[in-house]
Image 1 (cartoon, rainbow, N blue to C red):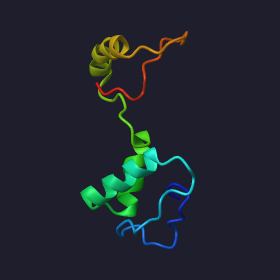
Image 2: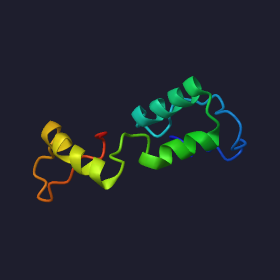
Image 3: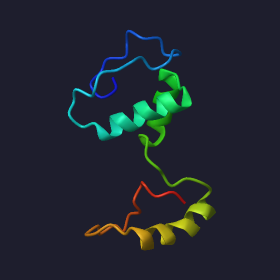
Amino acid sequence: MLGGVDLSPYPLDGPLPELPPSPSGSRGHYDVLVAKARKENLTIRQLGAWSAGARGKNAIHGSPARVAVGVPRCSAIAPRRNDPTGAVPTNMSV
């Protein structure tokens, strides 16, 4: 499924077919995924793998040392309000 569109009739290793506007109402993420697939000529499988990693969003990744260096920077840039855990936003790249 992509934005409420059933992709099961299409081959996983084929291109993303022409799709109607997202019927589910929320089009932002749907539009980003469709645009990426078109721009990079991704197959349905490749698009699924890319999206599954961080759901198409940026994520903090790297060695523990690299992440530890970047966490204070991310927290200073975009701290979460009212978050008692002090968790770092997952949409920040380090």
